Amino acid sequence: MPGAVRETYVAALQHDLADLDGGESLVGVVREPTGWFRAAVDENRPALGPPSALLDETKRRTEDLKMQGLCEEGAHNAAWAETDFADRYRAHLEESDDAAAAMRDLCDRVRDGETVVLVCFEGDGKRCHRTILQDRLRGRLDGG
Image (tube, rainbow, N blue to C red):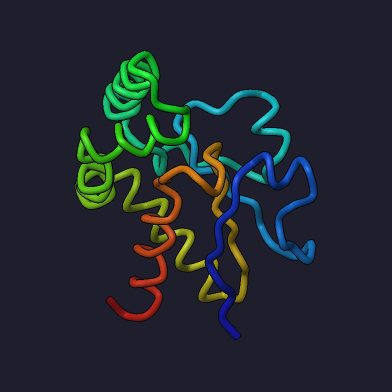
């Protein structure tokens, strides 16, 4: 029986807010994880994190928007739109050999019955690459 692909964020894990049964594999998808992040997940796949240049550009734009008076969440989401984050991240998944290999591995694991939970930093109110990645993985698993 195949497993599943789900997603959550690290603070939900740390504060027991994630809906987990304990049998899942927690897979970080962070380009540059902190030590405390690595301690919260079973493994991390940096190749599935957004490219550093895209992260840096989006963070700079977020800070600019916060200086203009937007709240953290609003600035993050606006910066996402302004930097075309979603499309650029999708392109990364398609163009990076390392990302493609990591996605194939995760799909194989799910087909073998494992439930994989994608984990990164962004909470529920912020747009996040893990939802895009989850959709891509599910699409591949469904034959797309």
